[in-house]
Structure formats: C-alpha cells, structure tokens
Picture 1 (cartoon, rainbow, N blue to C red):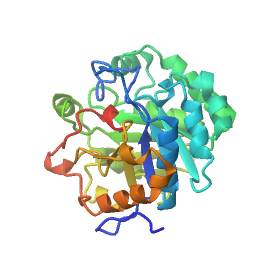
Picture 2 (cartoon, rainbow, N blue to C red):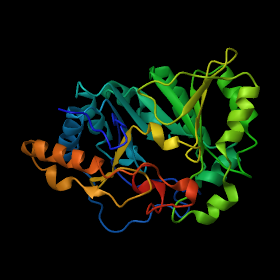
Picture 3 (cartoon, one colour):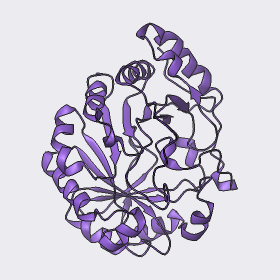
Picture 4 (cartoon, helix red, strand yellow):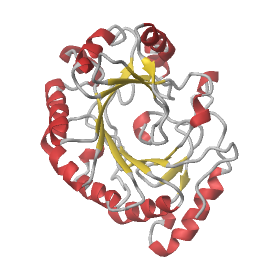
Length: 326
C-alpha cells in the first residue's frame, strides 16, 4: 500500500501514540495544576491499539513512540509494548516517560521489546527539579536512567525543556554529565499552548542561542537520519553523549515533518497545534475495517497544513501538551 504523504511531499513514517493523558507529575509548562480528571477515562484498548498499529504499519510507519501523559501509569503498559514490538514492520519502538517507574520496570519493558527510551529531566539540581515538576523524585528518576543504561537500551535520551530563569544557566552542568555518559541530551524549546501563554512569555528561551554557543564550542551538526525526529543533533569528540535541539520556532521547522499523532482516545492529529483531530476509533473495532481506516488516513493527509503557525503567535487548539502526547 502507498505510504502516507501530504500535498507538500512530506512522508510520514513516525507515529506518536498516546495511551493515556493521565500524569502523576505537575510540570509548570504542561500540567501546572496536575492532572484534572473529566470522568472515567475511555482510553484505547489493547485490541484497538493492535488494529491501529497494524493499519499504520501497512502505510509506511516504521517508528512508534508510546506517549502520554505518563504512559507507564497504564497497568497494561508492558502488553502495549509487546503488541507493537511483535509487528515486524515497526523497526523502532520508543517511549517517553517521566522516569518515576523506570528503575522498577526497565528490565521488564526491555524484555517486552522496548529499545529506545526518553526520560524527562529538566534539571540536575534536585531542588529545581522539584520546583519544575512538582514532585520530589529527582534521585528516583536518576536511578531509573542508570538502570536503563545497565539493562542495555539501544538509546537513552534525556529531554529537558529550556526555561528562562529556571534551567537556562545549567548547560555546563548538563554537559559535564554527558562527557562520560553515553546518552543523548535534548533541549526542547518551550512552546506556547492555550493554557500556558503567561508561562511562555515568562520562560521562553530561543533554541538558536544554544545552537550558536555549541558551534562556537566545537560541536558538530550530525547528518540527518530517516528515523530521527525533529531534533538537530550535535556531537563532540571529547564527549560520549550527544546534544539535540528541538526548535519549533526556527524557520522551516515544519519542512521536515515526518510524524503523526493519535490521542489516547483515538483521534488522529496531523499537527500538535492546528486542529481538533479526527476520530479513528469507529474503525478500530475489527481488523476487517483496516482498508477503510487506511483510506481515512490518506484522506486526512491531504488536509495537513504546511506549518504549525507558532512563529506567527498562533497556538491552535491544544490546551496543554499532555492532551495528545506532546
């Protein structure tokens, strides 16, 4: 079957699949008031996830990242890993986690088929970590990262959202960590959302400032790999780790878009910001609906916009990033 492609020639082989919007952290840039339940959640079931993954794998999806909220809060998280890992057309399986349960479950997840993991660590100072996340779990998260490295994950990445007045002066501390630790450290430029306008105005730092500094310090921009997300990756001969920068406000950021998103309740999102999403759930009841599901995916791709319009100050309809997996 033909690969998913939009009207601008962009092909989509990367799916970010949210399995819950529940999170047990209260990060200021995402859920400052913590998770607010709106009744009994009706998240995608294992059967629905299986049908969804099967359909996406038929139209060129090679990489799936399991996201949340905090995906490991689902009791069947390991089963979700197995379902996706068992699909031979999915060559890269990853997840993003706050690391709260990583130390306890890293080995189990690895044995189920997970090979790539991103852990959110916005500060290496335990007090500042608590201030940003609302949880005093820095040492627990760091233990989880050590465990993941010991288990043998193919790649361990650390996500840190750049925050002016909070962690923007901590780059030397982060660099000291990756000098002798083989991890990918990714700095993510803060993005404005519907509920986070004031926070954005107070804490936004332009990623290009960090890029300029890295190049001045001898870091080299790595070649782009088809499995990469939107990060620009940098290496240095004196460091075991790498640095990645995700800069959504940089010109032409959307030109290399290769990802789609499905929310925990089964809505397809062509962009993190620009639209309300299109339901897929009615076509996840039976594997016999796969052809119709694939037709809907192709039909929606022709409506994808050329850009997210963030650089024009348009935040779209996304109220907070946990709602569709960031």
